[in-house]
Amino acid sequence: MVTIYDGRPRHPEKANRPDTPLLRKPDWIRVKAPGSPVYAETREIVRGSNLHTVCEEAGCPNIGECWSKRHATMMIMGDTCTRACAFCNVKTGLPGPLDLREPANVADAVARLGLKHVVITSVDRDDLADGGAAHFAAVIGAIRAATPATTIEILTPDFLRKPGALEVVVAARPDVFNHNLETVPGLYLAIRPGARYFHSLRLLQRVKELDPTMFTKSGIMVGLGEEREQVLQLMDDLRSADVDFLTIGQYLQPTRKHAEVKRYVRPEEFQSYARIARTKGFLLVSSSPLTRSSYHADEDFAKLKAARSGR
Image 1 (tube, rainbow, N blue to C red):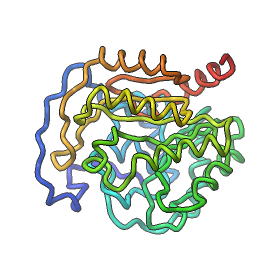
Image 2 (cartoon, rainbow, N blue to C red):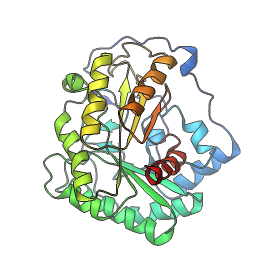
Image 3 (cartoon, rainbow, N blue to C red):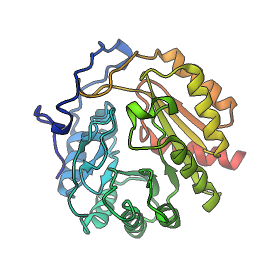
Image 4 (tube, helix red, strand yellow):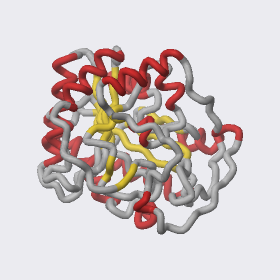
């Protein structure tokens, strides 16, 4: 069942981390509280299907807007991650067994929400032999069977040290394969210690080798202490891996136990990143303070298809 944050500590495993400062949010980062009738209907459909969403588990600031449009990003394989990234609000621990009914439940929710495009993500499941690759494939297959016209975007873990896992997911033929680099390589040890930058980059490149027709996508957060030149080099790295779509958004600190926001990047700087990324050859770029991987993903996919056909 979806967990609504009730104010109690979500991260007992982070209790011994030192507190970090909390910067006051600027006006451009504020959003309206959720509460529309369609929002409530979306929540009931998700709950009734016994699903988790990254919208709630990760505390996404866009939940009010997206759920009011019946757009929910499904988070499969439970609500507990085997990693403890310094930026993430999803709880860490030893996950339970996979729910074999989940693929059907996801497909049912997609049908009831009437989604033309759906984003499926997951927690990291380093405890599984294939990192959850077969489960991703099962979810994709169930959606294809229930709503064949729905396009499917997946946001996967890195499947680190899971030989053959990527091939299983690509063979299931999602329409968009997304894997986020999250930040520049110099910050990985502090921000994403369980991952490896060049492994993630190679994973995206390998997707294109396995299926050159598949759209690929990646995203990063800014405001963690990265330098502008590092962001521009990351763009070049992604283009070298033939990645089609880039998202850039402001990092927002979930609690004092998470990595601190070093600065709030101004909207005009996001616009500058977008202009530069387009000149580097990305088919589509979404760069704004509130940009997240699945934000406006349905509209972006339509633009991606149009851009690909016109290339």
